[in-house]
Image (cartoon, rainbow, N blue to C red; front, side, top):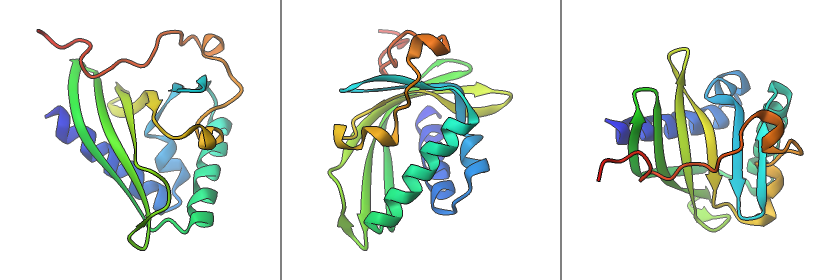
Length: 157
């Protein structure tokens, strides 16, 4: 069930980006959203910050002529009834040609008001693209201090 839920969420988010549907996309993101990658951590805490990130992604898609964003869920686990952790890879293509290296990410989805939303993202996107995911808001300012969980956290062993 959790693998299907994660893949469906990834597919829906990609479709919203291509449809240029900010409101729909923003509804898939929790606030705050903790973002981690090899160069740092930050939080997206306002709708305006979400709008800025969405605009940057759309601009990158236009600049690189991205025609497909293929996101593939690899591993997921329910942490509890309202949280799911998973890993996935992202391929960005322009007419069948890769426009950047594939990258792997870890995500936590949290059910808020009956809607699954991203609340933590550990992105494997290259540091060159840091501006697409990070803000100037440190995690401590948003009340998020822990690292994004890995899919094995919460799993019974």
